[in-house]
Length: 163
Image (cartoon, rainbow, N blue to C red; front, side):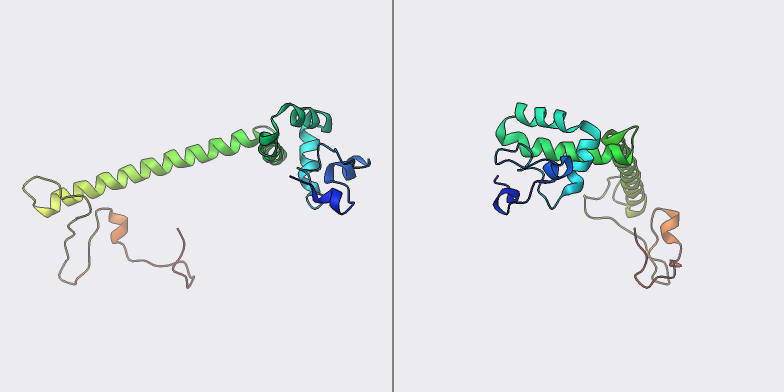
């Protein structure tokens, strides 16, 4: 993990921000390259340079890069949402997963109910992957969810809309 800052005599982002000379043994140099100054600025603003330096020195060398990347992610999240930080983002994603899982379960149950009611398969649901749909005289397929049977009116876009 040699830093590019030492090979080209440019200070790492941390030393440049702190206005100090970047020494060959700089603890920040491998993790805060000069081309990523905002990464250090965010981490410094939330955690402070001294705390980050202590943390880097306390973590095993093979885990330091992951630790610094985690600090950078947490700092950016905390700057975007000062109250909840990355916990808020995680919470939003967990709620979204639960909502989508409930929606998927409801659709799956609708499909099973419809397939069981329309297939006339001796009171047995059809094998997975085989669902019966009835066609009317015009050749249209009717789906178990009433909204799926409504004609698509589009949104004025030529790409057919988005999900």
